[in-house]
Image 1 (cartoon, rainbow, N blue to C red):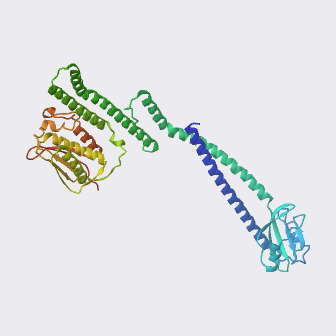
Image 2 (image 1 turned 180 degrees about the horizontal axis):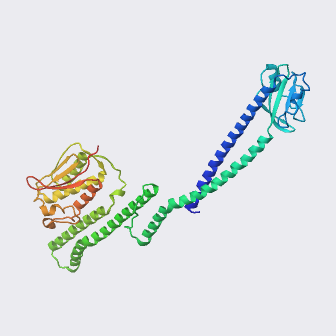
Image 3 (image 1 turned 180 degrees about the vertical axis):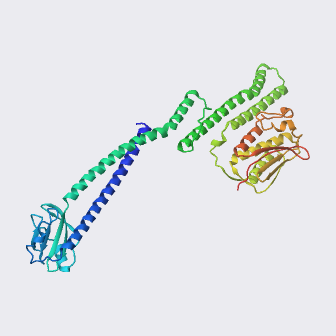
Length: 440
């Protein structure tokens, strides 16, 4: 059973249940209203006839012919013995309720009694000359009427459910038509692998939300495919140079049996350098290929100055160089590991450009991290490209590195909704950093 049929069946069933409930409530209300109306008429008739009748009036002509088989009347004495009975073959049953009404001098409550002729609603009123007058109303006609309207309620409920099912089927078809378009689009993407085939969202209900979610999923898949392609392209391009150098040196070592020890050491030193460069390059390529959105690390509030201080301490030990940090108590929201990697890459970049005895200066204020080196500075032509992948200025080509460190910084900062900074230092050198929104 398809979704359209299930919706139609569910709506029809719900309407049927609701209509049957309404019919049941209406039927019960009708029964109570008929009983109240009959009881009011019974009480009024009893009040009109109670005067002038007593135990001594066994043959009262005015009573003859006034009551048919559905409205019998019975006169009883103080003990409840029937004296006169009109409109019924057998005397009405005299209950304790009827006797109590005579003794108390007040009309009895209306009650139902079963006889051979059917069920009767009965009221007993005391007579002025003693005894009591019992008036009854046969419930046969009322029961037949209620049976008829009960059947009508059921028929109306079933017809209403059938009509509701037809209407629901049409509405379901109209409502699910956009879902059909969404399914067709998904099938088209699966068949053609075209991740740019997004759905145009023209509505803002649940179907519109599903369409928007589908487009978001396609965008995520496209980004993942782009990252995969970029990793393959970058790896194939950038790994070729160190691998070629390694192969050349190793081949030379295998063929040159008569090399001097010093020459062999120089070649092995080159091999070790190329291996280190290759390791760094692979690590950074993998880092760039990661999707920061899908990281398992929780996003939390970070004390930025303390984090930068920890990174600076590790850099001092690694480079045997002073890293001076000045910071305020800025807090930002993000992933600590990513922020640490960005700061570490900035300090590593400053280390490459600073002289051996020159410190690296890091300032943290209002969500900004600014790392200053004491190198030659960055030309205006290079400032707009220092965060590009694999970009290395003419001055940087002789230095170690892959050209990916600052690109990784840019990716991390973009993930946190921030911006990168590149400026000239007032008295020489460059300032490279980033700015993210401080936590509120």
